[in-house]
Length: 390
Image (spheres, rainbow, N blue to C red):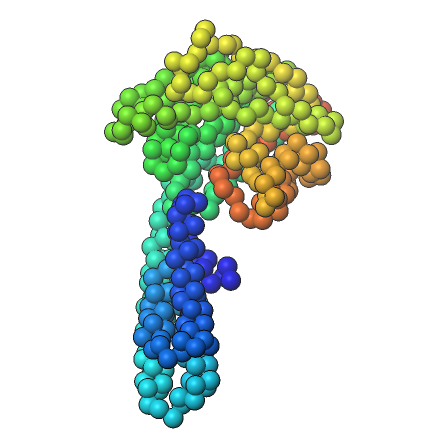
């Protein structure tokens, strides 16, 4: 019976609200069963007509047109069963009950349909605005960045008009290809403002800061200014933070990372996946008070031609199936047989959707970087044009 209730589930509702809604949706059907029980028991002399007539109106408050119509059909069935068992078709009362029930049912189904259409139209309009804002904030990465091929993927969870706080970017600079992957705690406009502050600082500083750690410092400072200037309550200022991973790939066979509380990236090397994590964990951006020493410099890891580097948010690895099992990201990467980065992410996306039965609980963002073999890079006209960068 999920199809009866699906239209009434509110976007972004928590587990408690969803449970209450389910209980409210079951009330009309429970009352119908109660009425049927009364009619089949020695208490059948009780007059249940007004109670049954009110059920379509009660169902219209929490269900869509199909749920309301199902309740109306159930009330008609109980009334007809009662009239047949107790041989009351000869009286005029049963026809009055049926007429009242039909009038109320038609009115409730019509009103429910109109309200559902209006609500869906308003929600679609809000979603379009939210998607436009998200597209401006999160630009797809370029498919070619110097000696690298790249692709990005963003999936919004089924949370109605709530815009997530995932952020990512990959740009080619004179210091190499620089990337950021981050996740803001929370959703909605506060999360978008925090993500925009960090992204703007990253996009500006990557072009003139030689040291990758200094780029992260600019992002942390922007996050601090956002928290100080935010017109939110004290709880927001204390709890808002951004997990961030900043990476840099130069012409050498290494990748440099500064990880501020973000899930460790994965490298696919010769068919096997391994994580590359920091030697010293650092707190997220906005929680610099928790740092006990100076900021750690960027750490270097092997990233050879033919390797693939995946940056992602925790919405990927925390995605669960119906049994509660987390999505096995390393195993899924090793099983993907796609050639290009975009095809790789699309196949990974299909595996993720299959694992969760198309029911994501959190936003998902991914960047895949593919180091092109040196001979292929040398033959590429893009590579020759990239070699003239200052």
